[in-house]
Amino acid sequence: MRKRLIQISGFLISSLGWLFVLCTMAMDYWRITKIGGQGGSFIIKVAWYWSNLWSDCYTDSAAVTNCRDYPVLWNVAYYVQAVRGLLMCGLTIGFFAVVCCFVGMECTYIGGSDKTKDKVLFAGAVLHFVGGMSDIAAYCLYINRIARTAFARRVASGVLRYELGPPVFLGLAGCFFILVGAVLYAVTVYKVIRRGSRVVQAGDAHTYMAPPSRGRTIYSGYYKPSKLNGSNYMGSGRSSAQLSKLSQATPTKPSDRDAFV
Image (cartoon, rainbow, N blue to C red; front, side, top):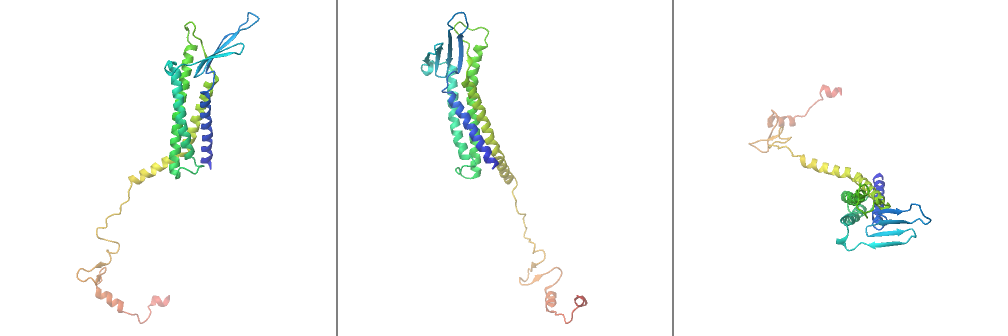
């Protein structure tokens, strides 16, 4: 029951993280800056410049927004292309990770035996980790690009100093949820897989073999077949004639010990 609850929690947390990452690709205000807004006249003019992964936009104080979509792929800035590619790769890997984890969870009745389901779930956890790291690399690349301009001592004329917008922080939170979900998945199946590998290694290393009998059994030490006559047997120090005499003797009266009993 505890294993099932941990897996369900991991599924919900990781799915929420992928939802956050997916939403950031369609959100605006990845970077934003403001120009103007200082007094000196009756009409205060303010302009906001902001961008996302698909366009650059401008909003004035009258709430009028004008956007310029990015041109074809090979004319877009290299870091924007890299961020797009890393996010798309991470989402693709995350799709297969969600499917594998759904099949490998204990509460689902598909996927085969428990051992097979544990292996599939562990593979899904690895895919979650790889996809989450791909998304983290995308957000870190975008942050590095913005920070290099924002903290530079001198910039060229016409270059704006942008600040990070909400989608970047939301995406980082989603990556954190994805990694937490992957850890919860791995915790529930790591011990089972490790224990199974130990059993296989122990069985391969120590193989039981019966000791050689060398033609001697537990009965052959006391009753050996005679080499001369197969129907006669040699006992321990007694001949066959003595054994036959003893078998023919019948007691006529009870001994003292039997009488006492």
